[in-house]
Length: 189
View 1 (cartoon, rainbow, N blue to C red):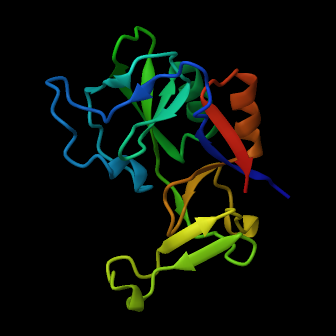
View 2: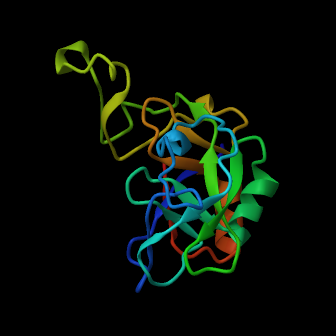
Protein backbone atom coordinates (compact mmCIF):
# COMPACT_ATOMS: atom_id res chain seq x y z
CA UNK A 1 0.00 0.00 0.00
CA UNK A 2 1.38 3.42 -1.01
CA UNK A 3 1.93 6.08 1.64
CA UNK A 4 1.23 9.77 1.13
CA UNK A 5 2.43 12.94 2.83
CA UNK A 6 1.41 16.56 2.97
CA UNK A 7 4.28 18.86 1.97
CA UNK A 8 4.07 22.09 3.91
CA UNK A 9 6.39 24.92 4.91
CA UNK A 10 8.65 24.61 7.91
CA UNK A 11 8.14 27.92 9.69
CA UNK A 12 10.80 27.02 12.25
CA UNK A 13 13.83 27.33 9.95
CA UNK A 14 16.05 29.84 11.80
CA UNK A 15 16.42 33.16 10.00
CA UNK A 16 14.13 32.09 7.14
CA UNK A 17 12.96 34.47 4.46
CA UNK A 18 9.30 35.32 3.83
CA UNK A 19 7.96 35.65 0.29
CA UNK A 20 5.36 38.06 -1.04
CA UNK A 21 2.99 37.35 -3.92
CA UNK A 22 4.43 37.08 -7.45
CA UNK A 23 4.41 40.18 -9.64
CA UNK A 24 5.24 40.90 -13.24
CA UNK A 25 8.58 42.56 -13.97
CA UNK A 26 6.97 46.01 -13.58
CA UNK A 27 5.89 45.12 -10.03
CA UNK A 28 2.19 44.68 -10.85
CA UNK A 29 0.38 41.93 -8.96
CA UNK A 30 -0.58 38.86 -10.97
CA UNK A 31 -4.28 39.28 -11.93
CA UNK A 32 -5.43 36.07 -10.21
CA UNK A 33 -2.95 35.22 -7.46
CA UNK A 34 -5.12 32.23 -6.51
CA UNK A 35 -4.76 30.57 -9.94
CA UNK A 36 -1.73 28.61 -8.74
CA UNK A 37 -3.56 26.88 -5.88
CA UNK A 38 -6.74 25.75 -7.69
CA UNK A 39 -5.20 22.46 -8.81
CA UNK A 40 -5.67 23.27 -12.50
CA UNK A 41 -3.27 23.82 -15.39
CA UNK A 42 -2.54 27.50 -16.06
CA UNK A 43 -1.13 29.41 -19.00
CA UNK A 44 2.55 30.29 -18.60
CA UNK A 45 2.49 33.59 -16.66
CA UNK A 46 6.09 34.54 -17.51
CA UNK A 47 8.07 36.47 -16.59
CA UNK A 48 7.41 36.74 -12.85
CA UNK A 49 9.30 38.12 -9.91
CA UNK A 50 8.80 37.15 -6.25
CA UNK A 51 9.65 39.94 -3.81
CA UNK A 52 10.56 39.29 -0.19
CA UNK A 53 8.47 40.57 2.68
CA UNK A 54 11.40 39.73 4.97
CA UNK A 55 14.92 38.86 3.80
CA UNK A 56 16.58 35.83 5.30
CA UNK A 57 17.82 32.33 4.57
CA UNK A 58 16.62 31.14 1.14
CA UNK A 59 14.42 28.04 1.29
CA UNK A 60 14.07 25.19 -1.19
CA UNK A 61 10.33 25.11 -0.54
CA UNK A 62 8.14 27.98 0.58
CA UNK A 63 4.72 29.48 -0.05
CA UNK A 64 3.82 33.10 -0.66
CA UNK A 65 2.04 35.03 2.09
CA UNK A 66 -1.52 35.51 0.80
CA UNK A 67 -2.41 32.83 -1.75
CA UNK A 68 0.13 30.25 -0.62
CA UNK A 69 1.69 29.87 -4.05
CA UNK A 70 4.47 27.26 -3.80
CA UNK A 71 7.96 28.47 -4.77
CA UNK A 72 10.75 25.88 -5.09
CA UNK A 73 14.49 25.93 -5.74
CA UNK A 74 15.92 24.51 -8.94
CA UNK A 75 17.06 21.39 -7.08
CA UNK A 76 13.54 20.69 -5.81
CA UNK A 77 12.00 21.55 -9.19
CA UNK A 78 14.14 18.88 -10.82
CA UNK A 79 12.66 16.22 -8.50
CA UNK A 80 9.11 17.23 -9.45
CA UNK A 81 10.04 17.53 -13.14
CA UNK A 82 11.55 14.03 -13.17
CA UNK A 83 9.10 12.18 -10.92
CA UNK A 84 5.74 13.90 -11.51
CA UNK A 85 5.79 15.55 -14.96
CA UNK A 86 2.06 14.94 -15.51
CA UNK A 87 1.02 16.28 -12.11
CA UNK A 88 2.79 19.65 -11.95
CA UNK A 89 3.79 22.72 -13.94
CA UNK A 90 6.99 24.60 -13.14
CA UNK A 91 7.37 28.25 -14.13
CA UNK A 92 10.70 30.08 -13.71
CA UNK A 93 10.55 33.06 -11.34
CA UNK A 94 13.09 35.62 -10.21
CA UNK A 95 13.25 35.70 -6.41
CA UNK A 96 14.47 39.02 -5.04
CA UNK A 97 18.20 38.92 -4.32
CA UNK A 98 18.76 35.39 -5.68
CA UNK A 99 20.88 34.35 -8.65
CA UNK A 100 19.98 30.66 -8.37
CA UNK A 101 16.94 29.45 -10.32
CA UNK A 102 13.57 29.25 -8.56
CA UNK A 103 10.24 28.03 -9.87
CA UNK A 104 6.58 28.53 -9.18
CA UNK A 105 5.15 25.05 -8.58
CA UNK A 106 1.60 24.57 -9.87
CA UNK A 107 0.05 21.27 -8.80
CA UNK A 108 -2.51 20.52 -11.51
CA UNK A 109 -4.22 17.42 -10.20
CA UNK A 110 -7.17 17.38 -7.81
CA UNK A 111 -8.47 14.11 -6.39
CA UNK A 112 -11.55 13.77 -4.20
CA UNK A 113 -9.97 11.49 -1.59
CA UNK A 114 -10.36 12.91 1.92
CA UNK A 115 -11.39 10.19 4.36
CA UNK A 116 -13.92 12.10 6.46
CA UNK A 117 -14.19 9.36 9.10
CA UNK A 118 -10.43 8.96 9.58
CA UNK A 119 -9.76 12.72 9.92
CA UNK A 120 -9.87 14.27 13.38
CA UNK A 121 -12.55 16.56 11.98
CA UNK A 122 -13.97 17.04 8.48
CA UNK A 123 -17.01 19.23 7.86
CA UNK A 124 -18.45 20.33 4.55
CA UNK A 125 -20.16 23.63 3.86
CA UNK A 126 -23.93 23.19 3.79
CA UNK A 127 -26.76 25.39 2.46
CA UNK A 128 -27.50 26.35 6.09
CA UNK A 129 -24.06 27.99 6.35
CA UNK A 130 -25.24 30.76 4.01
CA UNK A 131 -22.40 30.29 1.50
CA UNK A 132 -24.02 28.70 -1.58
CA UNK A 133 -20.75 29.17 -3.51
CA UNK A 134 -18.96 26.85 -1.06
CA UNK A 135 -21.52 24.02 -0.61
CA UNK A 136 -19.78 20.65 -1.05
CA UNK A 137 -16.33 22.03 -0.22
CA UNK A 138 -14.66 21.45 3.13
CA UNK A 139 -15.31 24.09 5.77
CA UNK A 140 -13.01 22.45 8.33
CA UNK A 141 -10.39 19.72 8.02
CA UNK A 142 -8.04 18.82 10.84
CA UNK A 143 -5.89 15.75 11.19
CA UNK A 144 -6.09 15.20 7.42
CA UNK A 145 -6.32 11.60 6.26
CA UNK A 146 -6.92 10.39 2.73
CA UNK A 147 -8.35 7.24 1.21
CA UNK A 148 -5.30 5.97 -0.71
CA UNK A 149 -7.48 3.68 -2.84
CA UNK A 150 -8.94 6.78 -4.54
CA UNK A 151 -5.56 8.23 -5.54
CA UNK A 152 -4.80 5.99 -8.52
CA UNK A 153 -1.45 6.67 -10.17
CA UNK A 154 -1.10 10.30 -9.01
CA UNK A 155 2.24 11.20 -7.46
CA UNK A 156 1.40 14.82 -6.53
CA UNK A 157 -2.08 16.32 -6.08
CA UNK A 158 -4.38 18.51 -4.04
CA UNK A 159 -7.38 16.96 -2.27
CA UNK A 160 -10.72 17.82 -3.86
CA UNK A 161 -12.89 20.15 -1.82
CA UNK A 162 -9.87 21.28 0.23
CA UNK A 163 -7.17 22.62 -2.07
CA UNK A 164 -4.69 23.99 0.47
CA UNK A 165 -2.53 20.89 1.03
CA UNK A 166 -0.04 19.53 -1.47
CA UNK A 167 -0.02 15.74 -1.19
CA UNK A 168 2.81 13.60 -2.55
CA UNK A 169 3.69 9.95 -2.52
CA UNK A 170 6.49 8.40 -0.49
CA UNK A 171 8.90 8.13 -3.46
CA UNK A 172 8.80 11.88 -4.07
CA UNK A 173 9.09 12.54 -0.32
CA UNK A 174 12.20 10.33 -0.20
CA UNK A 175 13.72 12.07 -3.23
CA UNK A 176 13.08 15.51 -1.72
CA UNK A 177 14.64 14.43 1.58
CA UNK A 178 17.61 12.95 -0.27
CA UNK A 179 18.08 16.26 -2.10
CA UNK A 180 18.44 17.98 1.29
CA UNK A 181 15.25 20.06 1.09
CA UNK A 182 15.29 23.11 3.39
CA UNK A 183 11.98 24.73 4.29
CA UNK A 184 9.67 21.78 3.66
CA UNK A 185 8.21 19.39 6.17
CA UNK A 186 6.19 16.22 5.69
CA UNK A 187 3.18 14.91 7.58
CA UNK A 188 1.75 11.52 6.69
CA UNK A 189 -1.87 11.67 5.58
